[in-house]
Image 1 (tube, rainbow over the protein chains, first blue to last red):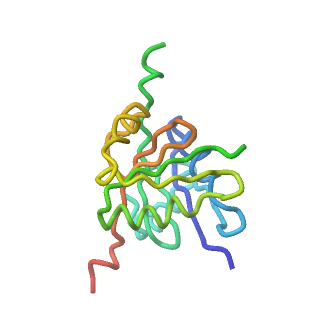
Image 2: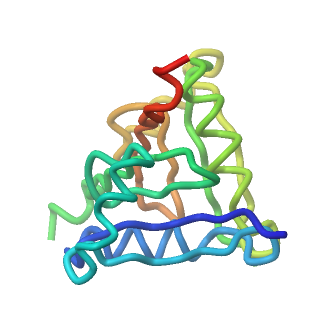
Length: 79
Length: 79
């Protein structure tokens, strides 16, 4: 049985990037990844909060919440 | 060729947990994950900073830095 992993986001660009990079990087053989847009599915907010989610984007793996903050690379500021 | 992913940490318990959960969750078929303890390998700090790492634990995937903040589940506070 695969480990449940839920990626909560709100559709902002930084979330979309984190989603692509982190959520899709998980091993599909071991993790069942679900992507939840809390802006479109407000009914999922309570469950996210119950899992310890304080902000988005966040990844809940097997019940443990990890908040992900994308830091823009310096190179992105120099263009 | 696998995508490089570097997990920077400093040996704190929260880092060790994030390391186990996130770094080891990446698909080994697509990512070449390296774990770097910046407390023991200070010579790697400059490269981490150059990649945009502001705090640990952080995961740099293909050059993009993601800062990971572990939020303790409420259940852990109720024992």
